[in-house]
Image 1 (cartoon, rainbow, N blue to C red):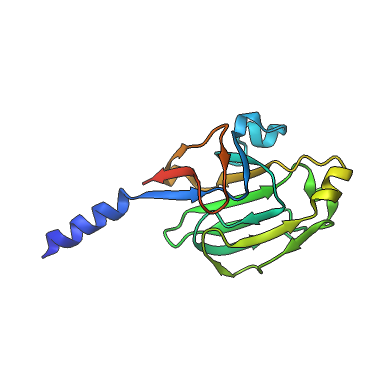
Image 2 (tube, rainbow, N blue to C red):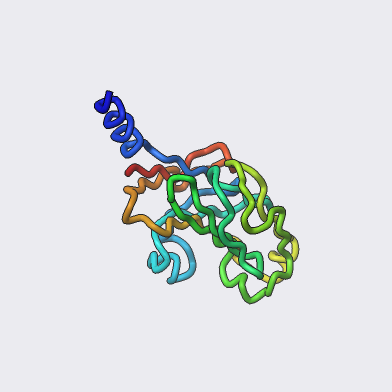
Length: 166
């Protein structure tokens, strides 16, 4: 009987965790992001998406653990402990929330593909803002991430862009 529990624990530890695209658009490696903090992976490893729409969605089921006051970024925590951050655009913190609308609040439980933040695409174009959006793993030491979909068109909530195994 105890062997059954050991097998189940081993299966859970080796399970592959999938993170979906946070926007419709083209998925690119972090190294191609036009910001040295992200391209140099100072905040962690992940992928970026050049969005073609103005709604950013949850990459997985979890809890919105952080929602920046300026709404340009949010953090999520999965039930299994995986922590991630989504940073919308480059230098968007300087907008102080202008052009962003929160569709959820901090602490909310969300499902993969749920809309979380909307931005004003026309305003961002007018201001010359690069809206490349980064999906960053914050605790990658506990997981072995595999980046997928580099250079490909992806659909938010549907296409897997990162797989992690424990």
